[in-house]
Image (cartoon, rainbow, N blue to C red; front, side, top):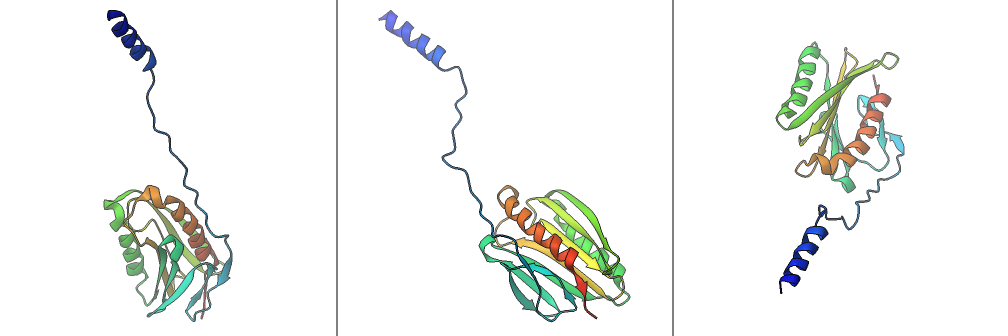
Length: 183
């Protein structure tokens, strides 16, 4: 009897020397549409490239919403004319970005400038469980001010939406870099 107990203890001690780690059954495979772009066709004081897979919804006040139904997301475009209020518009845009500091892990920005097209602005990356992960604003400093914000139609979970954020962020950079003002 003691032999069996001793043998059982030896098997348990020798056989249980490593950590048990559960293995995933499969990895998530994300398939995004091939990127192709076209110019916006709606009559606005601005024009820029949008993804062909996006759905453009016209809104009042020269605003737009570019919907990504498969990703359950949208890029909301707001436009305001500059009438000696550029400083206030810039402060409001920064305020809207930094309202996310409560949930954000980090907010980084990079300046954008295109002298030829008179487009100057800033792109913000907001990491963490914030309501909006990418935003930008651009202006010509005289007549036009445009702001774009990415939103998902679900509770923010940064790790889960990060691939979609990166995909749409490339579209938003293209919007900003291709933007032209209409007179």
